Amino acid sequence: MHHFHPARRRWLALAASAVALTTPAGLRAAALLLTPAQSLGPFYPREIPLDSDNDLASVAGRSGLARGTITNVVGRVIDEHGRPLSGMRLEVWQCDANGRYHHPGDRRNAPLDPNFQGYGQFVTADDGRYRFRTIRPVSYPGRAPHIHFAVSGPGVESLVTQMYVDGEPENERDMLLSRVRDPAARQRLLVALAPNPDDSAHLIGTFDLVLAADGRLGSARADPVYRSLAGV
Image (cartoon, rainbow, N blue to C red; front, side, top):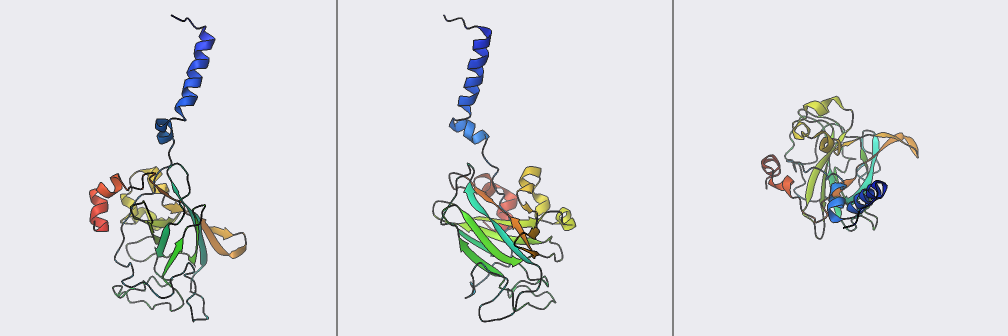
């Protein structure tokens, strides 16, 4: 039997701890928090518009600019270990500055902004990055300012979620955001919008979407609240 000096035993314990961090179990412990799934909502387009690029603040064939504060939303699609996911299709949709969706099911008494695209798509680059130009989301009855996101691609279950503006008072009363009980998970959906360094009249915010390494939604899809909201 080997008898190690106390200092030697302490060194071995530290080394074992370091090795543990490189094992699969250690990696799982240090994994990034997954982006929570949220409702698709009733206003996903029935038909994808002809102009569906990543610039929602302008519409092809029109010279005007959307009402509202121009906002760039940027980020990456990565897995829980921080590895970029390329070739992922991102879809975004939101209401215009009048609180109205470009959807026949939205019958609110508010005019439509003809210069707002309302929906856009983008495919992530090799480094998992994406970019959308849109407007700062606004609130409407029952909902805090938000942007809908959907992520799909080879090897992953489609994730539907929503991005909220950090610091908005309506966040505390929003019927969907308030159901995210875990403060850390809730924070994953909140994005701070700040003046864009390239153009201080516009805003910019970073929203990273983190998917499971095996591509599965897992417990989020099994959650009865998610299932009832998303219609799955």
